[in-house]
Amino acid sequence: MHTPESEGNGPRPARRHQRYESLPGGAANPLERPSDRLERRLDRVLMAVLAASLPLVAWAGGSTAHAHFEHQRRTQVAERHLVTTELLADARKDGGNPGTRAGAHAPVRWNDRAGVHTAVVPVAAGQQQGTRARVWLDADGKPTSPPATAQSVTVTGIATGMAAAFGASVIVGGTRKGMHWTFDRRRFQQWEREWELVEPRWKRRER
Image 1 (cartoon, helix red, strand yellow):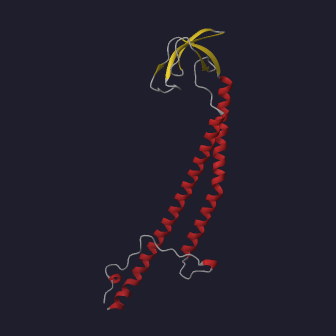
Image 2 (cartoon, rainbow, N blue to C red):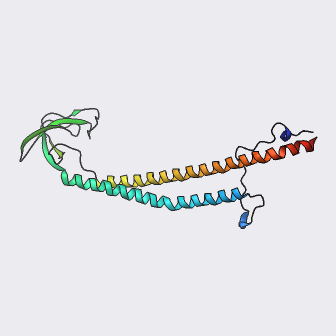
Image 3 (cartoon, rainbow, N blue to C red):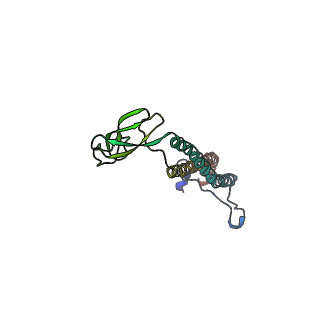
Protein backbone atom coordinates (compact mmCIF):
# COMPACT_ATOMS: atom_id res chain seq x y z
CA MET A 1 0.00 0.00 0.00
CA HIS A 2 1.34 3.34 -0.97
CA THR A 3 0.75 6.45 1.02
CA PRO A 4 0.94 9.98 -0.42
CA GLU A 5 4.25 10.36 1.35
CA SER A 6 5.74 7.33 -0.41
CA GLU A 7 5.08 8.64 -3.91
CA GLY A 8 7.59 10.66 -5.88
CA ASN A 9 10.38 12.03 -3.73
CA GLY A 10 8.57 11.62 -0.48
CA PRO A 11 6.88 14.15 1.78
CA ARG A 12 7.72 17.78 1.18
CA PRO A 13 8.38 20.18 4.04
CA ALA A 14 5.98 22.98 4.80
CA ARG A 15 6.84 26.41 3.44
CA ARG A 16 7.71 27.56 6.95
CA HIS A 17 9.55 24.85 8.89
CA GLN A 18 8.12 24.13 12.33
CA ARG A 19 10.10 25.62 15.18
CA TYR A 20 10.01 24.05 18.60
CA GLU A 21 10.46 26.19 21.68
CA SER A 22 11.00 25.46 25.33
CA LEU A 23 7.97 24.56 27.41
CA PRO A 24 6.49 27.04 29.91
CA GLY A 25 8.53 27.33 33.07
CA GLY A 26 11.83 26.82 31.24
CA ALA A 27 11.43 23.05 30.84
CA ALA A 28 13.27 21.61 27.85
CA ASN A 29 11.14 20.56 24.91
CA PRO A 30 12.23 17.10 23.69
CA LEU A 31 11.33 18.11 20.12
CA GLU A 32 13.46 21.23 20.20
CA ARG A 33 16.51 21.06 17.97
CA PRO A 34 19.84 22.83 18.58
CA SER A 35 19.04 25.14 15.67
CA ASP A 36 15.73 26.07 17.34
CA ARG A 37 17.50 27.00 20.56
CA LEU A 38 20.16 29.02 18.74
CA GLU A 39 17.59 30.81 16.62
CA ARG A 40 15.48 31.65 19.66
CA ARG A 41 18.46 33.01 21.56
CA LEU A 42 19.63 35.13 18.62
CA ASP A 43 16.11 36.44 18.19
CA ARG A 44 16.01 37.49 21.84
CA VAL A 45 19.38 39.22 21.47
CA LEU A 46 18.12 41.18 18.46
CA MET A 47 14.96 42.19 20.29
CA ALA A 48 17.02 43.32 23.28
CA VAL A 49 19.30 45.32 21.00
CA LEU A 50 16.27 46.93 19.38
CA ALA A 51 14.66 47.82 22.71
CA ALA A 52 17.91 49.31 24.03
CA SER A 53 18.94 51.11 20.86
CA LEU A 54 15.67 52.80 19.88
CA PRO A 55 15.75 55.47 22.63
CA LEU A 56 19.47 56.07 22.10
CA VAL A 57 19.17 56.33 18.32
CA ALA A 58 16.17 58.64 18.59
CA TRP A 59 17.93 60.87 21.11
CA ALA A 60 21.23 60.96 19.18
CA GLY A 61 19.55 61.68 15.84
CA GLY A 62 17.18 64.27 17.27
CA SER A 63 19.79 66.11 19.34
CA THR A 64 22.27 66.20 16.44
CA ALA A 65 19.66 67.58 14.06
CA HIS A 66 18.47 70.09 16.66
CA ALA A 67 22.01 71.35 17.28
CA HIS A 68 22.66 71.66 13.54
CA PHE A 69 19.50 73.59 12.72
CA GLU A 70 19.69 75.70 15.88
CA HIS A 71 23.14 76.84 14.78
CA GLN A 72 21.70 77.73 11.38
CA ARG A 73 18.82 79.59 13.01
CA ARG A 74 21.12 81.68 15.19
CA THR A 75 23.30 82.48 12.19
CA GLN A 76 20.23 83.61 10.27
CA VAL A 77 19.03 85.73 13.18
CA ALA A 78 22.44 87.40 13.42
CA GLU A 79 22.74 88.07 9.69
CA ARG A 80 19.17 88.98 8.72
CA HIS A 81 17.26 92.07 9.66
CA LEU A 82 13.90 93.71 8.96
CA VAL A 83 13.40 96.94 7.04
CA THR A 84 10.26 98.92 6.39
CA THR A 85 9.50 99.25 2.67
CA GLU A 86 6.89 101.02 0.59
CA LEU A 87 4.94 99.21 -2.12
CA LEU A 88 5.42 100.85 -5.51
CA ALA A 89 2.40 98.99 -6.96
CA ASP A 90 -0.53 96.88 -5.83
CA ALA A 91 0.30 93.34 -4.74
CA ARG A 92 -0.45 90.83 -7.46
CA LYS A 93 -1.35 87.19 -6.95
CA ASP A 94 1.21 84.84 -8.40
CA GLY A 95 -0.38 81.44 -7.76
CA GLY A 96 1.93 80.63 -4.89
CA ASN A 97 5.15 80.47 -6.88
CA PRO A 98 8.17 78.97 -5.11
CA GLY A 99 9.89 81.50 -2.89
CA THR A 100 6.73 83.41 -1.98
CA ARG A 101 5.13 83.29 1.44
CA ALA A 102 1.67 84.67 0.81
CA GLY A 103 0.93 83.93 -2.84
CA ALA A 104 1.50 87.57 -3.91
CA HIS A 105 4.40 89.88 -4.72
CA ALA A 106 5.01 93.54 -5.40
CA PRO A 107 7.86 95.96 -6.13
CA VAL A 108 8.98 97.79 -3.01
CA ARG A 109 11.40 100.58 -2.12
CA TRP A 110 13.41 101.28 1.02
CA ASN A 111 16.22 103.55 2.16
CA ASP A 112 19.33 102.81 4.17
CA ARG A 113 22.81 104.21 4.58
CA ALA A 114 23.78 102.89 1.16
CA GLY A 115 20.96 104.75 -0.55
CA VAL A 116 17.61 103.87 -2.11
CA HIS A 117 16.88 100.27 -3.06
CA THR A 118 14.09 98.57 -4.97
CA ALA A 119 13.16 94.91 -5.35
CA VAL A 120 10.21 92.64 -6.06
CA VAL A 121 9.43 90.71 -2.89
CA PRO A 122 6.70 88.42 -1.50
CA VAL A 123 4.04 90.37 0.37
CA ALA A 124 0.63 89.70 1.87
CA ALA A 125 -2.08 89.47 -0.77
CA GLY A 126 -4.35 92.49 -1.15
CA GLN A 127 -1.88 95.23 -0.23
CA GLN A 128 -2.08 98.36 -2.32
CA GLN A 129 0.43 100.84 -3.65
CA GLY A 130 1.87 103.03 -0.92
CA THR A 131 1.31 100.43 1.80
CA ARG A 132 4.15 99.83 4.23
CA ALA A 133 5.55 96.30 4.38
CA ARG A 134 8.25 94.74 6.51
CA VAL A 135 10.85 92.83 4.51
CA TRP A 136 13.73 90.63 5.66
CA LEU A 137 17.19 91.37 4.23
CA ASP A 138 20.26 89.15 4.34
CA ALA A 139 23.81 90.19 5.20
CA ASP A 140 24.27 91.56 1.66
CA GLY A 141 21.13 93.68 1.90
CA LYS A 142 19.10 91.47 -0.44
CA PRO A 143 15.51 90.36 0.28
CA THR A 144 15.38 86.91 1.84
CA SER A 145 13.10 84.67 3.88
CA PRO A 146 12.63 85.11 7.64
CA PRO A 147 15.01 83.20 9.91
CA ALA A 148 13.83 79.85 11.18
CA THR A 149 11.94 79.86 14.46
CA ALA A 150 12.90 77.97 17.61
CA GLN A 151 9.66 76.00 17.30
CA SER A 152 10.47 74.83 13.77
CA VAL A 153 13.94 73.75 14.91
CA THR A 154 12.40 71.71 17.75
CA VAL A 155 9.90 70.06 15.42
CA THR A 156 12.68 69.20 12.97
CA GLY A 157 14.74 67.64 15.75
CA ILE A 158 11.82 65.51 16.94
CA ALA A 159 11.00 64.40 13.39
CA THR A 160 14.63 63.48 12.75
CA GLY A 161 14.80 61.46 15.97
CA MET A 162 11.66 59.56 15.05
CA ALA A 163 13.00 58.89 11.56
CA ALA A 164 16.27 57.60 13.01
CA ALA A 165 14.41 55.27 15.38
CA PHE A 166 12.26 54.00 12.53
CA GLY A 167 15.36 53.34 10.43
CA ALA A 168 16.93 51.37 13.28
CA SER A 169 13.80 49.27 13.70
CA VAL A 170 13.74 48.54 9.95
CA ILE A 171 17.38 47.41 10.05
CA VAL A 172 16.87 45.14 13.06
CA GLY A 173 13.60 43.81 11.63
CA GLY A 174 15.29 43.02 8.33
CA THR A 175 18.12 41.28 10.19
CA ARG A 176 15.62 39.14 12.11
CA LYS A 177 13.80 38.20 8.93
CA GLY A 178 17.05 37.29 7.21
CA MET A 179 18.11 35.22 10.21
CA HIS A 180 14.84 33.24 10.24
CA TRP A 181 15.08 32.70 6.49
CA THR A 182 18.64 31.39 6.85
CA PHE A 183 17.72 28.95 9.62
CA ASP A 184 14.68 27.72 7.67
CA ARG A 185 16.76 27.21 4.54
CA ARG A 186 19.33 25.17 6.44
CA ARG A 187 16.61 23.05 8.04
CA PHE A 188 15.06 22.39 4.63
CA GLN A 189 18.44 21.32 3.29
CA GLN A 190 18.99 19.07 6.28
CA TRP A 191 15.53 17.58 5.78
CA GLU A 192 16.35 16.82 2.12
CA ARG A 193 19.61 15.09 3.06
CA GLU A 194 17.89 13.00 5.71
CA TRP A 195 15.10 12.04 3.32
CA GLU A 196 17.62 10.85 0.75
CA LEU A 197 18.82 8.37 3.35
CA VAL A 198 15.41 7.37 4.64
CA GLU A 199 13.46 7.12 1.36
CA PRO A 200 15.06 3.85 0.11
CA ARG A 201 14.38 2.13 3.44
CA TRP A 202 10.85 3.50 3.48
CA LYS A 203 10.07 2.04 0.05
CA ARG A 204 11.59 -1.36 0.85
CA ARG A 205 9.52 -1.59 4.01
CA GLU A 206 6.30 -0.93 2.12
CA ARG A 207 6.87 -3.66 -0.46
